[in-house]
Length: 129
Image 1: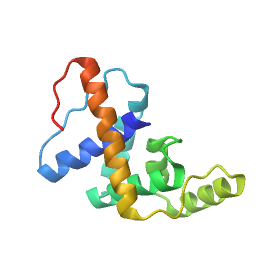
Image 2: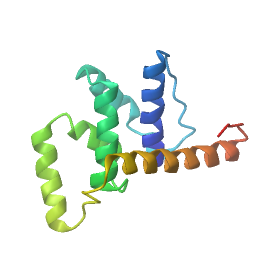
Image 3: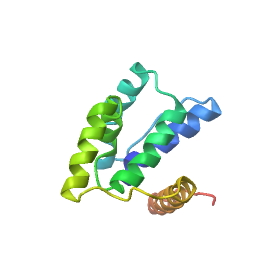
Image 4: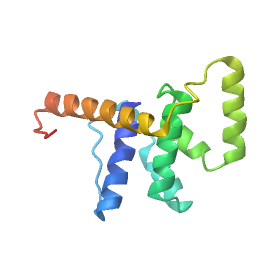
């Protein structure tokens, strides 16, 4: 969901900036599971680069239709991930698979930025673009 992707992007940004982060989900259902996924990724000592590649892979493979947090946890076991993706491809439920990484990155950032700005305006927050 956009909320789970937003949480992961905020975590990446805070990590790169060397800042602590406190995430308020404002009751968004898409943020359920955040504590579990962050704990598992920290325990597995995953890097910001790994998380970014997983976000891009998720967008390419799943098209943001599935559960991002499950996808990330599944990514801790690459063999299981490959098996699940092969099954999804066979069923025709897998997303795009041959997009250029730059185009995917741009699309992810533009889409999430628009959603985050819209949500902020709905809460009365001020944002810069």
